[in-house]
Length: 501
Image (tube, rainbow, N blue to C red; front, side):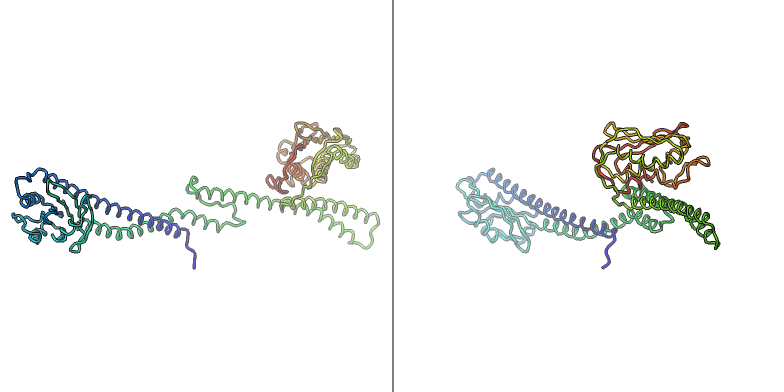
């Protein structure tokens, strides 16, 4: 079975909820009308009996025989849909308002003429009324509903003592009008509820269709967006409602995806460009060395030296790219251990002395010998070596490169300072971008791949710290690394790098 659409489910649920509400409301309304109409009838009967009792009190029963006296009292009571009667328990005779012939009743049957009953609209014969009155309680008022002539009749009986007479006062009210009202109300309910439900379901369908139309439009637009069209966005009709906020969030997601794809494309293009040069040199040197049968050992050694140099450069680029790829893939590359940053910094200076000596650069270390820390020793060593390597590359012969360490304000601070030409202001904001290289004059630097500072930033941020350019002018540059001494929660391996790359 094919699942229903959201539009259909909304309309059906709305219709079901409305149907239940209407059914409960109709049942409650019908019960209220039935109860209130019956209460109104009972109130009318009570008033009629009270009036009959008042009339008996006003008449002088001592001056007239009981038959004439009781017949004259009920003669004045003529109601539509109501009949009043008096039972004399001593004689067991009933005097009814149906007795309107102008003569006192001679017996019970004479008091129930058809014409009088027709005028009273109460289908209750005098014998029936007599039986009810005889069975009524001697002391308590009785209220009941009986069926006479196929019509329900509401009857109220009340015992009454008038002098030496023991009477029962009664009033009967036909419920034909009440039954007609309830019947019409029931027809209106059973005819009206389905019409209301149809109208409600149709309205709910149209309302859901109108409100879900933006979803259909967004679905069609999203289906056309691919890797080559990530610049497109979903339409936002009303940014303040739920669908508008959803479209806005989705558009922001598309923006992040577009940026990630652009970075990926740029990364692939830069990586291909960086790898192309050493591969071309290695291939060219090998082809040149093999192009002639007779090559001197000196020429072959020079070719192998060039191939070895480019191979090492190629290996360094591949290692850096592999590290960045693993970081972006979310691998946990940081393995903290207890170490001393002072000892690690001094070891890095010792390892870089050969590079500095080749350019006649003075390399020294100044700072604390300990600085206990919990971090990844291999990655921190790589960070410091990248900074020292950059400083030595761009410092002219006879210059000075210094690594300083210290602590303060709950952090360990490492600084690498050089006496190079400084970094142009236009390039300072992009120093830590991948594959970005500062455009120095010819002869300054050795044309690295531009990944060292990007990796250094990721290592610092993966340890909960930061790295930045503290100073750069014509007298040199200083890079500062700040590592918190407190315990930190390791982020995902690619989080720091991916969020800023």
